[in-house]
Image: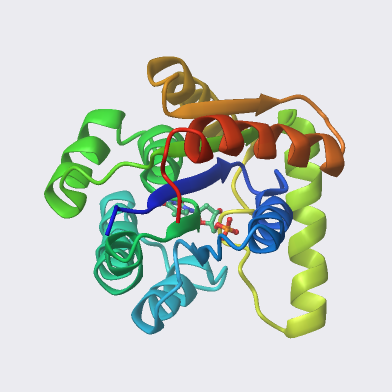
Length: 222
Ligand code: TMP
């Protein structure tokens, strides 16, 4: 059985990742590619508990290294329970965030640095790397506005508060943004940068083009 393909979506809160992952999954399903869709943090029962702990805006302060370690604890569980079994079964895995998020948020935003995050990645994830990463980077201001609006709406609708990161200052998000750009410049073979304030349809088209060229024609078929 040929190994499947591992595709991740990355970007700031409010970059439209979740909408795009849903559209990409539908596009694939229509082509009988049946992807496994997951997210981080979360995506497993243990991961959902870690997610609640990390994102609750009422949580007591979490030390940056503890935050990073929890992100990797969640990731270790997701790799064991969801990602590796799916890849071994030849499936395409679509994952909303992976280690690039830790590098951008904890390495950049919390200023732990890339080296610390990448060392932890090596210990926890071995050499598991996405085959393709779609990095959505609309303007910083557009992302911030959308993220704040979304969190207020979600809290009002579900009573669930996932706003701990959205409370961060603009300077934090600027560092996250810069680190994402740094990752894209460092790994152009893996990371496709989708920039600018594009419409949902325009972003979807670029995503489909990247997936078709880099995954489907490269023989990573489910
Ligand atoms: P989400 O809303 O896209 O699901 O992301 C949840 C939040 O968790 C988001 O603010 C980014 C943050 N996060 C990190 O800080 N580090 C990580 O490694 C991951 C996966 C997410």
